[in-house]
Length: 250
Image (cartoon, rainbow, N blue to C red; front, side, top):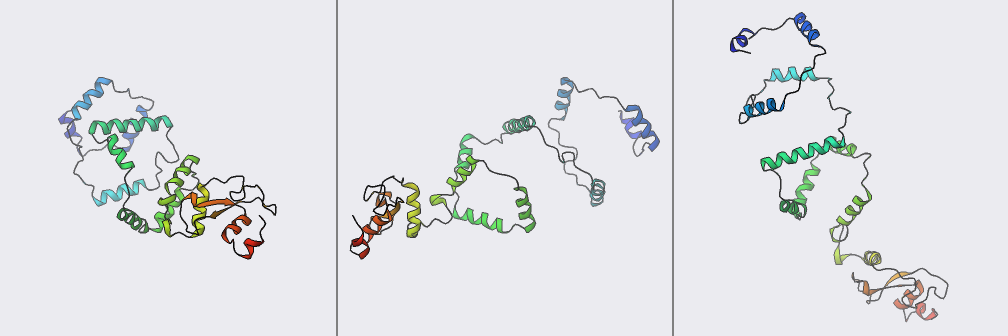
């Protein structure tokens, strides 16, 4: 379009009837795709030029008009999903774009990000950020997780990540004797025979084995300070000079 034609149409509009006639006449016509040469020409022309609307801002009146026009309008992607192939292509395109612009992280940087250690200050800041979330946001987060189930592999990883010294309720050497027994019991294999009498059954015919501390009741996390034995053998070892220990048969 020449400059003269552009000036001629400045401030003028087609009538509704004219628009309708144009629509009817163009129905069924298909626009031919651009050739590679045409695309390259457009790309070369626009390279280095800023966006035409860069730095411009819409007025409040225009924003209200756009808002009113879009009310009740359903988005194009509502209730639609992209295919796996499309998602992979989009992901690869983003990576190529990042590589071109130099935004992509190096393997060393990725490794550092993955293995970074969270300090107490970082954890505290994260906790404060979570506490400041509104009820509406928390509800949305909760609803978004409904119906999602992590795989068995993911569950194992989550369990290992929060087990042992990484657990929030880890007390170390200040734990109680029950906690020590449970911790060692999970790591010390249970034998078929009692480690005190070396029999499968005790004198009463019981076969159940329990974990017994053999380190003068000084509780540690060392499995060598514990033995698996029958209740009777356990009692006899703990109270050898008492009536219980004397009355138990060898």
